[in-house]
Length: 308
Image (cartoon, rainbow, N blue to C red; front, top):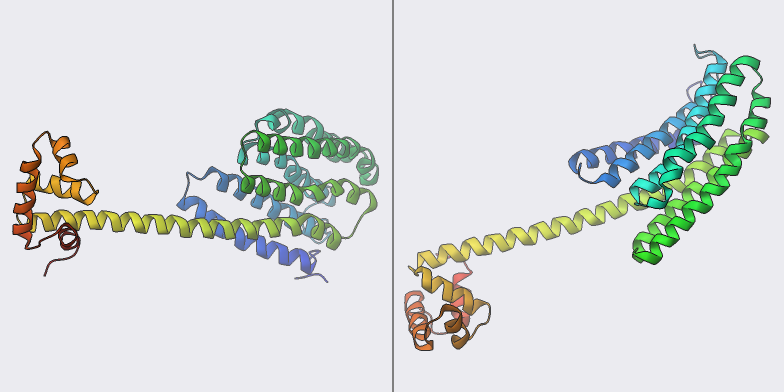
């Protein structure tokens, strides 16, 4: 079933709509927290998925005012571009330094070069896409197998060195979502339907994105709770200081009250202030008199609550 008179299958359209909504959410989060580099790499991945689904769904279509060969080049190009981004994504987002050579050099040599040679240059000359697919997919297919092994080994090695279990499981989950892309080299050869192709390449990504957003929401709640507690602590500190001034406590008396609050005994407070224990006792008696209390617990309670 196609939508809007285009070549886009309804399932492809659903994936596009879902990923577009997720991209908006992710973009808002990224611009709110620009220091979160992981969000930037993940947002780039989402954009590439969108481009791949849109061009793969629309092209080739003779009704579009772009020549069919150009449409084919664009459609295959977005697929190669997305596949080429995977090693770079793992290298940057998960800090897998052992993937640097593949991310920066291996991908241009063994993925992008075959695309440019067979799907752009040769295809522009002979116009025979079937032949170009047959020979143009050989090197990418072999290299894709190598990449999957190298990425998995990098993840496992990092886990053995320093990774905690949660981070390791997150990386393995993302690895599982890109593994089906190995079949992309076969789809071109057997001309599989758009439905099978989009389900194979997108289902895992949607699942991992939902998990990622759930984790982001959970982390946001934790951050909010920490901020709330920090604000409460700051408020208590400010209220404590205001009450000390309200009861006319001197700087020395305020310092002694803070020591009492931390649980120090008179002798320990005296040692910290380099005075006698008797001096500390006299200060405490003055503090009790000014605040109209007769024990330490009542004093702390009174100084931490609003005065009416």
